[in-house]
Image: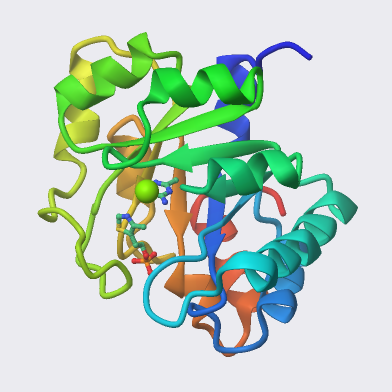
Amino acid sequence: MERYSAEKIKQLLKLYFIMGSNNSKLSPEEVLTQALKGGITIFQYREKGENALSGKEKMELGKRLQQLCKEFSVPFIVNDDIDLALELDADGVHIGQDDETAEAVRAKIGAKILGVSAHSLEEVELAVRAGADYVGIGPIYHTNTKKDAKEVRGTALITDVRRQDVTIPIVGIGGITAANAAPVFHAGGDGVAVISEISGANQPYANTQSLLNALNIEA
Ligand SMILES: Cc1ncsc1CCOP(=O)(O)O
Ligand SMILES: C=C1C=NC(C)=NC1=N
Ligand SMILES: [Mg+2]
């Protein structure tokens, strides 16, 4: 299997839904089904934080969510847990600065998608050199979802990265809604990643459609 092209990654990043069992109002399966029907372009299973599942339960839920993604041909990404990603044969992984190095993870996952969180120009450049397929930059806006989120920076870092002619695909994350998503693209981002705007919604399908409309993307 060969690596995804940057062009393909940019298309996949457009509407990036992220969820774990402790983010969802409705059942995780129901939320993801509605989000997939609503047109998300990539999904990340992020089982983390208070009351997060572990072990067999975590793996079983991951398998169920992966199956839903397969039915919609949407890539299934696992956050942090490289072993789980390999066990499920996920389409990729996302790691933060406090996880294994991107080089070490790339060696384990081969041509699967590798995403890295970055909070500075230097961290972006390190991720590029390590062979990451995309970087996640945020928090763009205030978020209550990640307790230990870094400083809210708006789209400033995205702008800085593009000013340096660094072309790696970028997804913005943190407090993103249909109302505030567009600036991420204006700054040079290729997509927006959301947790609560969809997972915490009473109508995940409707919220997903609203996000897509705000990005002027056909469903
Ligand atoms: C995982 C993560 N990384 C930076 S902010 C954040 C949480 C995003 O959640 P929400 O979309 O609900 O603000
Ligand atoms: C922290 C994160 C930043 N960006 C993405 C895409 N996922 C994450 N878990
Ligand atoms: Mg992590």
